[in-house]
Length: 129
Image (cartoon, rainbow, N blue to C red; front, side):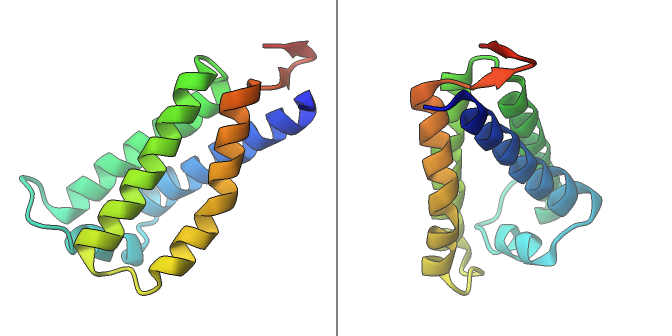
């Protein structure tokens, strides 16, 4: 697979994790995301704290995707996490109005994650990693 395309996928995936984690869950809270977390069964922490913790995790994951370190592990981890987050949100929260749309929107992300997991992180600064 083309190394530049793999790098572009990695950059895009990192941006998506950072946007959803850092921006929508920590800096500028998306109330739809908060509603999904608030709809989950009771936990030991408030929905706002749980949303922040998820946001921190997504932010770290985005940075991990960008780094290219352990790209196969990170790729498979983000695949599992995306499937888990969507499944929990759909099954347990009741706050996702269009589950089929959510799944359809995430299919391109899953394909990019699979491509990076199978073919490597791509070139960075003119060298293959």
